[in-house]
Length: 75
Image (cartoon, rainbow, N blue to C red; front, side):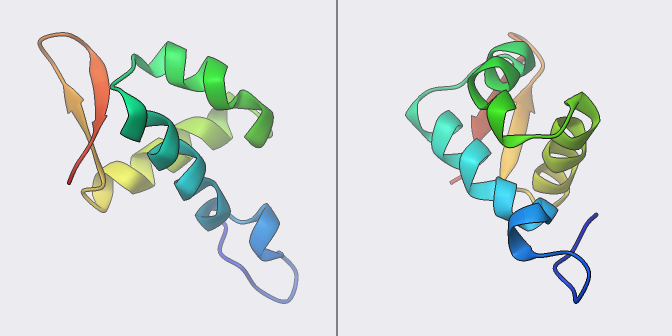
């Protein structure tokens, strides 16, 4: 996880991308592919996107619905 520091600005950190994902899935649940397509301009690459999803899942901010393969916001 890239945290803000003297070398890494907040804008370059993983934390700055949390709201992008949360605001996007707050509107409606999406598949990982749809979510990436909607938010990819905010990420350096797909690995950066997946890393951010991992952190949000670990923090229990998003969930993955296995029956339909969609990502949803945890309230």
